[in-house]
Amino acid sequence: MGAPSLEGGRRGLYNLLRGSAAACSLCSTATCDAEMFSKQRILLNTQVAYREFTNRLKLLISKHPELITLTLSNIFTMRLIGNKTHGDLAEIAIAEFVNQYMYDFRSIHVGKDLYRAKSKEEDIKIVNEITKAEFPVSLKAYGDGPLQLSTDKSSLMFRTLSEAVKLERPSQIKAIFDHAAFSSFAEINVLPLIYDEKRQRCNILVFDYDAARAQTTKIVRRSEGRGRKHPVFVFLDSKDEYICEVRYGDAAANALQRGLWTHTRNAFRYFESITGGWIDYSHNLVLVKLFSHALVSSPAGHELALEKIKEDIVALRKRSGI
Image (tube, rainbow, N blue to C red; front, side, top):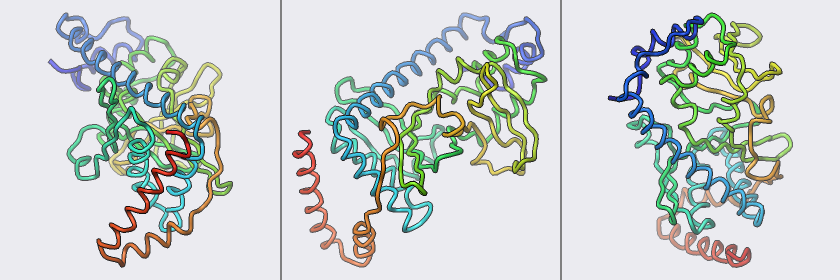
């Protein structure tokens, strides 16, 4: 038996959202409890493995900030080629960063073709070489502001929230987070590379899902207007301050933009900076020239250039004592 479905859990959730004390019947059986416990244990193991990775990455950056500054500068230089170019190249760049500078981790770039057939959002897979734990990571290269944390193409989150009149009681909030439609809330390991182009600074910010869940005291619907084409459900804390939101519910909305969003400025207290704060970056114009020349040169030329670049990486590792 799988986890409770959106339709199967509708009656129990409906009772909770409407204020009834009745519990979801799907969670009353030993079989369901066992299934849910097993899923939660797997999720917990993945979260622990991802937390170990981000802690290790944060430690590496604190000791050798020049390595991440160089890498992020190269990534955001790609915006000189095109506004969307940096996002895809960030995936292979961070995967290679892990392989070159984090000796106890290995990274594999999943690629877009595999993504199309996957049910989870995943750009790279990380393997802990010591524990052998494997976990997916979704890379997000966004400007400082709105940040999409997960995609909900079927709009299950929005439809679930639409059943409610008011969501202000602890039992109602818990019912939402425990519902199958919100299973992705803590399942996705998002590594956001955030940039402020005007100030030429960047940050690696990780959203704290546990804190967001623990601090949510109210979920309110905000209608269209003030620049919004579609209504959203906003998650607020006890001070009525913004945490995150569920966007886009109707058929007219872009399916890839439906899901869970937050805002790196408005919800900054719910992020952990892996880089220890904002770091300045600069454009590498030589890299742009390298790309342009590589695109009109032969594989033999690429091999020669690659060997020189590998030598440079070795020199960087030695200089950093890695």
